[in-house]
Amino acid sequence: MKHIFKEGQNEKVLLLLHGTGGTEQDLLPLAGMIDPEASVLSVRGNVSENGMPRFFKRLREGVFDEEDLVERTKELNEFLDEAAAHYGFRRDQIVAAGYSNGANIAGSLLFHYEKSLLGAVLFHPMVPRRGIELPDQTGIPVFIGAGENDPICPASETQDLKSLLQASGAHVTDHWERMGHQLTEQEVRAAAEWYAAQF
Ligand code: MLT
Figure 1 (cartoon, rainbow, N blue to C red):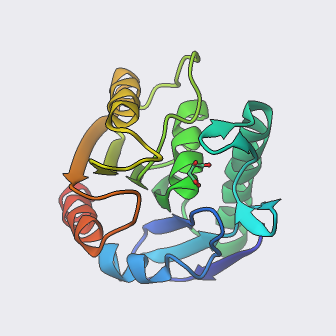
Figure 2 (cartoon, rainbow, N blue to C red):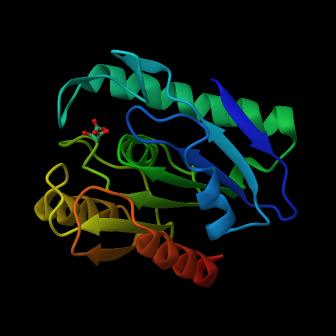
């Protein structure tokens, strides 16, 4: 997968996953705010929707192509194995930070694979898939940044995601702002505080 890797000064690796229409450049400033000493692995989604990069196909806004989601999640998980071997970082030290479509594929890693992520920062995520049993995520810390007026991720969707992750054993912290779907500096700061307390 097309990506940027920057080696850091500690063992952590921040996996950056952009929103629809973004690139691997978009979230680089976030890494500096969340953990300036971590290595950075910023990946571009392999799917193109009318030229807009995404991490998996959707049938329409908010309705995912499940088969593609499952396939692309596997592809990303395998890419993380390969990147760890190639760049020489520890595979068990990856913390994802994703926005919107990128948060959804990070959530999908948690929904499908045990021990794929050490933790996750999900900005405006949705429930990636319903009706499946999640792998054991005991003790995995997850931060959810949500907007009370987010038209793409209604509050009920965020609550559902929180409950599903908690049922798998994850420790979920949700942070709400009176905003919509946009990523705000305030929620990134809240995520950075949460991250400092976790790792
Ligand atoms: C998705 O398709 O993953 C969500 O609708 C969010 C987005 O618009 O990217």
